[in-house]
Image (tube, rainbow, N blue to C red; front, side):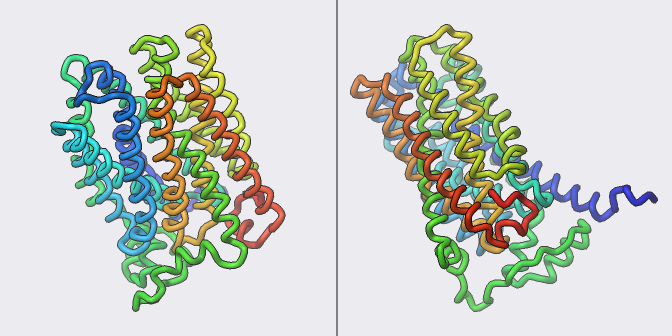
Length: 444
């Protein structure tokens, strides 16, 4: 065998990484479907006065789901670092699938809101868990690209939601769309049977023999992870690590940037079809905007991931937020249909991946044993913005100021650009050993 040939261990390790990535990608696809389905069917629900819904209530309902995601994300990291990534993924997919069934059966707005809140718990917990899983097995120096590749699934789910709304809602009604979102429940046994547990989690919990057996099966090198104390006294170590020494400043900067980023993501995801209708486009075009927006998101994840692994995720995130602000603002200007599709596509390219690069930065820089907590809390604190975004859009529409919706979202993009930009400069100035020990650029 020549010296350039790939060793069997590397091939087996790559096979394991691909298995974990594929399973997480499918789970995040279902997450995206469930998240975007409400925005996709909302124009139909408002037109038909489903459940007596008006724009003010519709904004509140959008915030219910994101409030559930806030709770799910804040608790997911800590719970995940205690019970394991695999069990957490199974629980999250189960919860948001069953909650969609409750939405499909809802006799009134209150029950529907409860279903969306419960769905949010599962949706909020899944993303940081899946990001942590793929980061655990990501090839060295490719962390941002792997996270970006994973998040293409979220936007594929958004595209699927638009087609579900187009093909299912008209002949069968809006409830059928939420029944469609129960299908991911069939995927749970596959995760339970095939998904391996995180090696870093097993070692951190003192389950070294189990980790060694798993690493032998897949010929994967055991990670160097600090074990948590078995008596449970160190259960908050992962959280307090975020605030040690001057780390608290960096943590708060990421949280503030995430607040603005998720306000943008969920505000635009919830209200894009409705705001475009308010700009004078018909329902069919409005739903096609959802497809184009998410196609842009898929491309943006791959481009941003490669660029971030080369130039630094915070730096790319800041530039992307600036370009997001410009493209979202342009949506407030009525243009020719073809040009509008181009702008919507560009908004999708920059908006979605700008936020994900915040997650990539936190994931890459965190210690393996506390990675889920770091990503989960960054996502969770950002969920305050995700709660505020749909509510803000609803209030603007209800008051007859829908034209200001895109302007408000554009200003939020500038807000996030400032905070992630400061975080990038601070980290570059520190040039600590930890920031360069993962074979990624120091600017991360």
